[in-house]
Length: 277
Ligand code: DGL
Image (cartoon, rainbow, N blue to C red; front, side, top):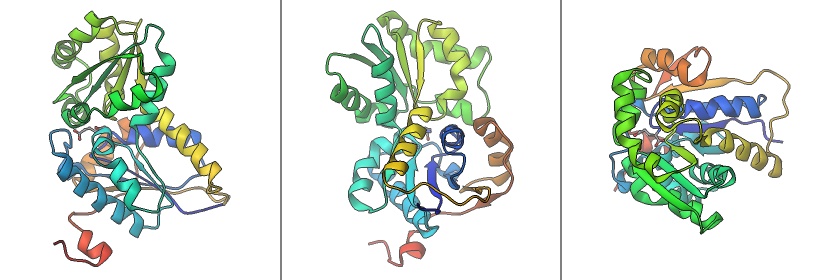
């Protein structure tokens, strides 16, 4: 038993789609969510820069005494999951392996499409994760550089965003995929538009649910489930505008967001007590 909270973070609001599933699977867990909205988007950033952000955020979450960290961002998972797992003692999971596993289970024709940010797609992380499970699967990756920006602006339906989605996904439709990994935690909010473009025959895979399932299994296996009977708290922290976070975040989370705290980075030296070299 471990009654401490689970820390979950993303570059912005997208990771709240993961929080939504975690609440469904683990309704008794306390959650601290951090959205790095001031530094959104992560997609165009380098691996080195993203690693710095990830370490800084994990240090911050550890200062809040979390028992587990979920990197609910594909770009950050692609850039830094392995390095973070090697460095920290706290258990850490990302969103890429759970999504890859779900897609391999879903595909019948063994042709899978993957869409994500530039950072995620160019890292090759999905290709590696899928090939480890089934080396015979054909993978069609497409970087959709500005798609998450539409979501963060709350523009998820309509002719403009549909035109952009069509432009990005045309080659995937022609390749005859039957499963499409939404390799960015912002994309589940575009499901309706994406489905209209790719057709009902293509199953959309969001790693949010798979990640929540993996978190539940891991907490149980490590005997770290919360057992206190008092209602769990849900804490929201953002590096950017609190009102925007509260208003738009409710769409991602599927319910109202109460209080949001603002934390301005960089904080690392305050948290771990060392100067950056
Ligand atoms: N939510 C982030 C992800 O899953 C993408 C958005 C961004 O570019 O920051 O990769």
